Image (tube, rainbow, N blue to C red; front, side, top):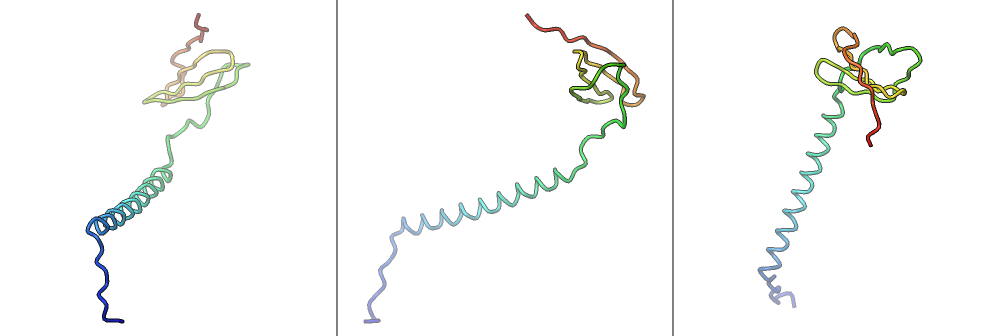
Length: 100
């Protein structure tokens, strides 16, 4: 009974097995690349924030953003205060008005 020939796999089944194996390999490599990129990006210290910001008396900060050479603070009395990053001096004050 051991002398019986083994049935041959159809060609399309071999091709399908090759496709599944290739897809699995590509997905594993992709996950490793994504994890590697996340690790390297999250290890970065991020943007440098100012040590302290002096706000006008009686105001509190509700938001903060920054750009090249400046940073801005949105206050709770609906103003945007733009400061020089190097000197910390107030450069511009913008009043926020509700749109109609």
